[in-house]
Length: 140
Length: 42
Image 1 (cartoon, rainbow over the protein chains, first blue to last red):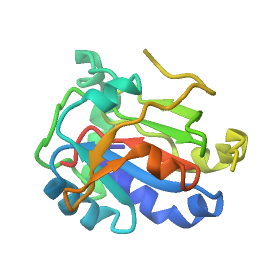
Image 2: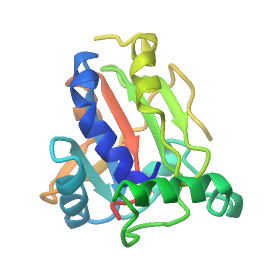
Image 3: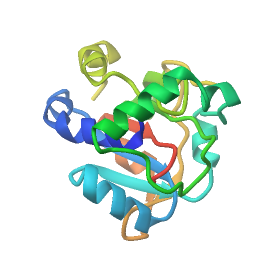
Image 4: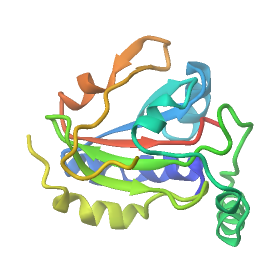
């Protein structure tokens, strides 16, 4: 699942995520105008933030992909799936080798869930993520 | 270095779609947050 499809999944399941008392923040590499274009199309109700550098990704332990994490059968499968769902990747606005990831942070700023993507087209399974939310033991 | 459960989440100042700076800590202080990092907005 590439980023556009992931954003669309978050938008589709936002009610279930909000029901778990979570707000959704998407951070992407690029300029604000890129967030306007992509979030506006695929996830208009999500809060999207941008950074032109990869330093925040790095701070969360998100590394650059290896060649195998960019060119693999799993990535090809994700690309085909995204294309069939009309959510193929657009022009790169940041580092094409950057790996994605997802976290849950509580109100005290502590990490409660981590998902480090295995390749550039990998994001959590949305239903698995929703099912695991109670396990994140969120402190309000 | 990957983050582990219970560790402090790194704070950062990012830009919203209007180009205004936003601190991540100001967002999670408002409520638990699903924070997803994309490769880019492409």
